[in-house]
Length: 225
Image (cartoon, rainbow, N blue to C red; front, top):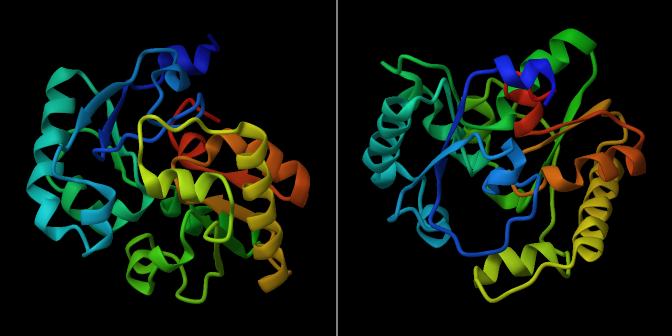
């Protein structure tokens, strides 16, 4: 294990209640953190319930999960869903360790450091609203593309069935196609931020296909770059 990972704070993940497959590289797969991450599932926080509103009705559950993770030894808290950036301020308030709810939080830093406009790749572009961008400190005109038209990854996550198996090649192709869609709608971008925490397994392939640096929740976490 690299020295940076040995000295990095232990990651605690607030998890939605999901059943779909999570390959290595997905934040919900313990192998992604070599078995060192801590997990707390918010049972009421299903994808369907989160998509039906802004998640405010689930905030008490997220706060309780955060506190359990800190009590168990987490040195930094993150989440398994980037749209929880809406609750960044609430989850960070009063927490004794850093809270990074979403890769979207990296957008202002990347743009300030590189001068490049950032584009966002989401699982569903419709889930990233101006309110999400504002919560991340990003510009309201930040371009966003999603995987809604994909044939493998998006349908699998929508079904949310533990019996499903994910074809990695087909999933990778979906991500690359969505990345190219993003470049078509915003050809001037100089970097991509992957909002969805299910997409980091494909970040390297996305970077190769687009020729752009790709940032995700794993690169945002200390010691994971």
